[in-house]
Length: 559
Image 1 (cartoon, rainbow, N blue to C red):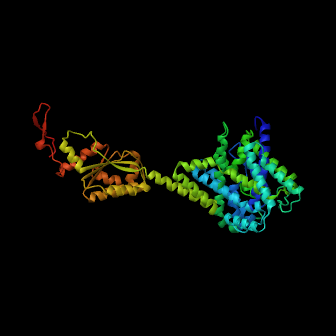
Image 2 (spheres, rainbow, N blue to C red; image 1 turned 180 degrees about the vertical axis):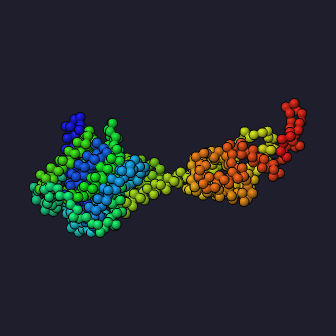
Image 3 (cartoon, rainbow, N blue to C red; image 1 turned 120 degrees about the vertical axis):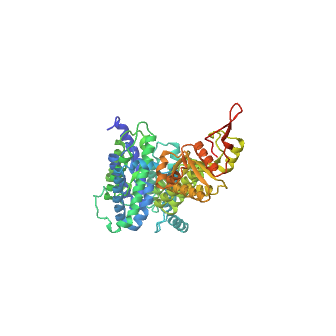
């Protein structure tokens, strides 16, 4: 399976050591208990490694998924999680079969950074009750729960829990800067557990009893009665699993040479993992960027590393459950607090803030919505904001500029004739896209044309046009015609003729012979129109001057 299995085995062992406290912590945070986190890490970690599209990806419970699951657990319990997991797994497999993996790359970076920042804040707020050693209040809003915990702590402080949480978080953050390759999370948790046992600190609440093994797969908790209510959360879980997993796989590719993931197979693997994990008492899972990065940095080259990670955690579940059950909840809260801090990429946030106002606004809106509302609404709002701001930027590129008459007018013209042409003909160059976001501004500007007799629209620089733009162009032409102004066009691209034809705009121009290939041809037609209307005099008696200075009669002169 690998050229050097020892490197993969060592990488898998290292990732398992890093993943153990995270799996326990995210299981507790989800509301289903530490055993749910371990079951997810084992089952989802193994299946995603086998069926996924990346050789280096490590899957399991994550903070982002916990944020989505907390309200589901609070309202529907284990049955809701099982139902959501099965639906989400089926949706992910469907997305894989439809080959939609490639489209996830179009999610804007400010939205990704925004909900990552928001998730980090939510994870941190979720740990406040356990870090302070107080009972968690009922409710779904993390701000309310965290504030209640702070007030309770103020009346009856639990300094032991606070010291354990702060100590573990500080050890992880300082250790990551001092020796990045050392798993300080597990070392800090072991130290915190040893301290509570040696000094018999009753105020440090432990995880509690854990089952010595994985439960048998079961559908006993399946909640079909709430199927319609859980459909929207299941879509959110599937979307999050797809987005986070593909993002993690992209990061893994960037950290290696010669590794490229298959996005559709990765979606399939995550779908299988999310179908199976809830059956064993776990929670929906995604690929984890932090664990995947550790896997790559420690030398993983194949799927054997991720499988080793799952196998080591399975051994811990079966052989070390009594020891794991003694870990203080406050220590796990410290692990997740440090994880939340490390999720925030200050450099990326600084880049987004300095890029454009639109990027900064999208990031802030997504982050705030994640904390105040939920992840689903946050991503939707972020995408809508990014789309609206992008449309505004693109629409701002559309311009209607008046230009001088081209110097290469066909025929010979006197200065007086050029002056008369300039008085009665105005030429506009249309630049950029003519679509719904910019079309009405175009109509307003074109309708305010001064009192002239001919308007020439140079369309060769129109990049795209939709039905709204074509209809607005037709409306503007009709309004100008009603004012007695003739509208001529030049340079219409072949790719834009279909939409102009379908809306009747092209027929309106063709019926009067007002569409031309080049601008000089349109100007010549405008000149003929002005002469016919008596606004531009013809050459007197059709006379012209020869190079020798003699006057002759031009039979083709227009009078």
